[in-house]
Length: 388
Image 1 (spheres, rainbow, N blue to C red):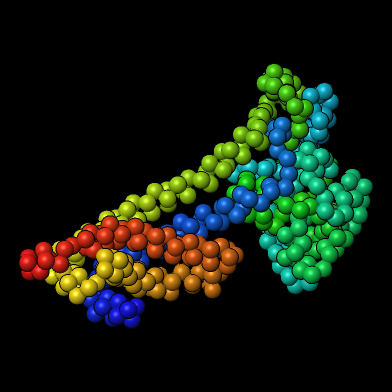
Image 2 (spheres, one colour; image 1 turned 90 degrees about the vertical axis):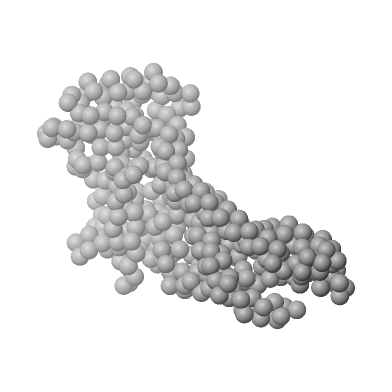
C-alpha cells in the first residue's frame, strides 16, 4: 500500500509540484523559527548566575572635566558607600549587566585562542551582584603589586581555554605586553539577560588611576525608594559639578533587554503563522478538488467493498507521502546547519528544531486532510457511479 501511494504521488509530481514547494517552504520557515525558539528557551532555563534585584547603576559622565578624574571617581565611590541605604558599591566599565554595550577581546593559553567579554571592575563587584565563586577567590588590592594582572573568569571560559586542565593560577596573555593571572572562577555570568548564552567572560581588575570607567553599581537595602535616588543624584551633582549623573535599575534594564530579544521571535512567529495558514488552506482546497474529480474512483472502490476507514486512510496516506517528498527536500537543506556549524550553535538545537518542524508539518497536513477524507469516505457508491 505504501509503495503504491509513493508511486501514485510520484507519477503526479508535476501536478503536485507547487504544493510540494509550498510545504517545503513552510518547513524551512518553521525550522528557522523553532531554532530561534529552542535556542532562547534553552538559555532561559539556565540560571543567570548573579543577583540583580535592588541593584542600581549610577552612571557618571565627565563631560568637559579633564582634571583629577580618577581621584574624583574614587571619592564618588566612597561617598556612595557611606549611605546607610547602600549595602555595597562597585565601579565597573560601561558594559554593565543588561546594557547594550559590549567589550570583547581574545586571550591565549598554550596556542588555544578564546574570545571573551571583558568586564573591568574593582574588588567589590562579587558583593554587589552576589557572584558565587566555584574556585579560588575574587581579586584584592594586594594583587596589583604582582607581576601579572589579576582576573576572574567564568566556568565556560575555563572549559574552552584550558580544556581538561584547571585554570586556577594559570597565566594567560592577551598580547605580548599584557599578561593575566587567573585568581578565581565563577560559574555563570549571563550579563545580557536570561535569554543570553553563557558566553566566556573575563573580569579584569581596575587600577586606582583608572579614569575611563564611570559606572558605579550599587546594591541597596530592600525597600529603598525614589527618595534616596533623588538624594543620591543631588549629592553627586554637588560633588561633581558639570558632570552628567544618571541612575538606572538593573531590574528595569533586564526587562527592556529581554523585550528586545523577544521582538524578532514574535515577528518570525507571525510570519510563519501566515505561511502555515496558507499551506493549510492550500492543502484543504486541493483535497476537496481531488474528491470532486475522483468521485467515480471512490464510488468504484466503495462498490468493490472498500470501507470508510480504507478510503480515509488512502487520502491521508497520499497527503503524508506528499508531505514526505517536501520534507526530504527540506531535510537536505536543514541538516547542513549542524554539519557546517552555522551561527555557531549547538547541534542539539538544530536537531530538536528539525524534529519539531517535521512533527508540526505532519500534524498540519493530517488535520487539513482529515475532514476532506471523511467526506470522501461517506460518498455512497450508487450516487458516485450514477453521476459518472
